[in-house]
Structures are given as structure tokens and as C-alpha cells.
Length: 186
Image (tube, rainbow, N blue to C red; front, side, top):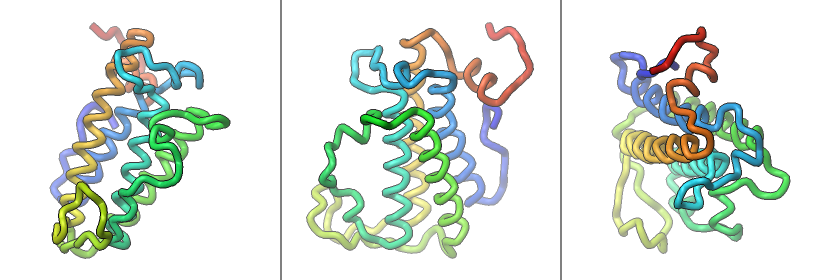
């Protein structure tokens, strides 16, 4: 997906294309790295590229699950260490989390394609989620816009982490990941 999201007219395709573009931005930032590099945290924060790929996929998975069944319990922390969602854990590789991200993306596309109305109300059903006020109602459209925003934020983080690792930037990484012909990037 070169540089810009496709200039599509249909809203659903446009939202999914923008989400894919931002998701690819995170994955491209990890392009060509070893597992050790993908776990490195070269900036002031603890963020790593493998962790960003994994976190973005987990967040997308939770929100799409919410679209499917309306259960806001997917937003409650589980029994796992919360920080494990931001890093590769023992036995997990960059290849694993990129494959997971791809699976989540494919599932998102299928679920969104089957949603009859992007404006349909999705009331939150799980009480006790502190950041979800009682009575709050979202729509699939709002969820997709939120996922685009969340994923774009992390794509920016990924750019900074990658540039801190080895100086690589988004255009050269995108070109390498997509197999573009060689050219000078200035």
C-alpha cells in the first residue's frame, strides 16, 4: 500500500483502507529486524517494535470482539501481566506477532464487511470497566475511527523506535517491505 490510502468513495472500504495503512506503518517499522532488535527499547520509553506490533493487534482484536458481541469485558485486564501485551514474551518471535497481526486484520475485514450498519448503536454491556461510563453507546463507525487513531499513534511510536535503532525511516522501510525498485531517498 504505497504512501497514501486509496481514494475510495465507499465509507467502509475507506475506513478499512486507512486502518490497514496505519497497521502497515507499524509492521513496516519492524521490517527486516531480528527478534533481538524487535525486543529492544532504544528510546526513552520501554516501547519495542515487537511490542507495538503485538499491542496494536491485541487492541484491534478487543475492539472487533466488541463489535461482534457488545461485551465490554474485553477491555478489562486479564490474568496475564498487562505489560506482556507490549513485549515479546518467552518463546514469542517477531514473526509470531506479525502473523497474529495479519490474522487479526483479516478477521477485522470480515467482521466489518458483515456489519449491516456502521451507525448502529453498540451499547457497552459490561459494568465495572472504569473508563466506560454507564449508558455509553458506540457504533461500528466510531470503533473503526478509534482504531485508526490508536493505530496511527502507535505507528508514530514505531517510527521513532525504529529510527532510534538503526536510523531507518518510513519511506525506505515501506519500499523495502513492498519490494519497490531501488531509488535514492533524500
